[in-house]
Each structure stands twice: as C-alpha cells, then as structure tokens.
Length: 233
Ligand SMILES: Cc1cc2nc3c(=O)[nH]c(=O)nc-3n(C[C@H](O)[C@H](O)[C@H](O)COP(=O)(O)OP(=O)(O)OC[C@H]3O[C@@H](n4cnc5c(N)ncnc54)[C@H](O)[C@@H]3O)c2cc1C
Image 1 (cartoon, helix red, strand yellow):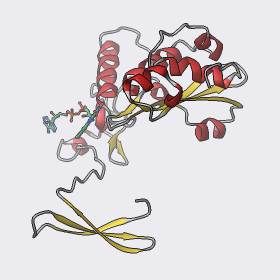
Image 2 (cartoon, protein in one colour):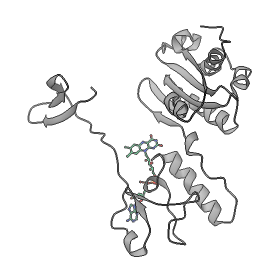
Image 3 (spheres, rainbow, N blue to C red):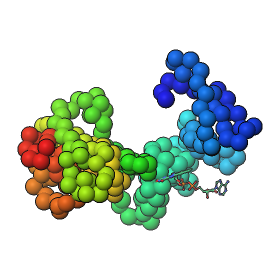
C-alpha cells in the first residue's frame, strides 16, 4: 500500500488491528503480528565524538576514501559512515582501512558496485545503475530483459516468476547495472559484480557460455536481448 500511513495498532484482542490511512480513506487490517521495519540510524551518540572534534554530518561520521576521520589517528567504517549500511560493505571497508594503516596500497571501494539483496520470495537483487540513474548520468543505453517464464530450469523448479534486466552503455558496451527478481537471484548477482569489476562488455557476456539448464542462463539471454541476439524468447 503506497502513499499510506499506519495510524494506530490495536493489540488488545487475540491478534492486531491496524488502522491505515490511504488516499481513498481509512482501512482496517487484521493480522496475527505487526513487524515494523522503519529504517535504522547510526549509533554515534555518547561516544565522545564531540570532545575529540571528529566531524559528523547528517548523523554519520565524516571519513575520506580510506576511512580517516577528521582527526588524525581515528578511523571509522561500517554503518556509522556514509555508503550502504550492509554487512559486506562494513567488512570491505574494514579491510581497506586496515590495509591502508598497514602501509599497503588498497583501491578505494566502488560504492556503485555493491550488490543489494532482499531475501524475500521471490528474491530481489541488484547492483550498479538503475535505468533512471544511468539516463540521468547521461548514458545512451542498451537494455535487455529475460523473463524466468522462458527459462527451462525455472520451469522445472516451479520458479517461473521474475526476470533479469541488464543495462549497458550503448557506446562502449559496459555493463552499467543489473536488476533481478526470482529464485536464487541473490546468488546470481555475484556474477554481475565480477563482470562489472572487470569492466565486462555485453558481447563478452553473450559469448560466455552459461550452463544449461540453469537460472544463470537468464543473464546471458538478457545480454543477448539487449543486443537483439536473443534466441530463446
Ligand atoms: C535486522 C537486520 C538485518 C540485517 N540484514 C542484513 C543482511 O541480510 N545483509 C547485510 O549485508 N546486512 C544486513 N544488515 C545490516 C548489517 O547488520 C550492518 O550493516 C552491519 O552489521 C554493520 O556493521 P558495523 O560493524 O558497522 O556495525 P555493527 O555490526 O552494528 O557493530 C557495531 C558494534 O559496536 C558495538 N558498540 C556500539 N556502541 C559501542 C560503544 N560505545 N562501545 C563499544 N562498543 C559499542 C555494538 O554493540 C556492535 O557490536 C542487517 C541489519 C539489521 C538490523
């Protein structure tokens, strides 16, 4: 329910009665439990940041690309700094930060190549640009989409819901972003992360033979669709 807000929850009975204000008026939803997922904020209060003079902005600690705070010798990584608040991001940031402290030469993290996954059913996974963001960034696009309804493995597994959508830069063929819904897509997205890290082009994906029957074939097929070469649609 979009453009709607929860006005009250009555838990006095056996279940819960939720009053929801919608564009077309109030609605009452009856359910067993209510799960509130209203976002998180960084826990940076009462750490003594003010006394040390460590700069914060919009509730996050300000750091450079190697996680130095504004005060020499103090570092910050993870949910308390900008960037996606995800476990794999915090982990990667920690490694880069410590490697830099140890005198190695780590590359800064590419925050546009971080996979985002939602572990619902069917699963959702994405990485890189959305079509809208890529257009706003000035790219000419080639876009390919392959539905799992056309996938043999998805049919055999009874998981025909969903699709793979790939977004390419029309000029150089770089894979700018991927968006997937379906069974196992939170596993499949790793292929895209590696492809993007290696600046793989659309034709390189099309020519990378994928095993049959698999859900991952949909990636090769979506790339082929972007270039008008798809056979199995
Ligand atoms: C319900 C939930 C589900 C999530 N699911 C996923 C998921 O599926 N995938 C994913 O990638 N990410 C997920 N996340 C996000 C992920 O947990 C965080 O991005 C990640 O844990 C951030 O790591 P961090 O080290 O920055 O912070 P944390 O893991 O929160 O670690 C901070 C630590 O500091 C300690 N601490 C706090 N204040 C002090 C203090 N004053 N002194 C000493 N210690 C202190 C805390 O106790 C804690 O142990 C989820 C988060 C939540 C809340």
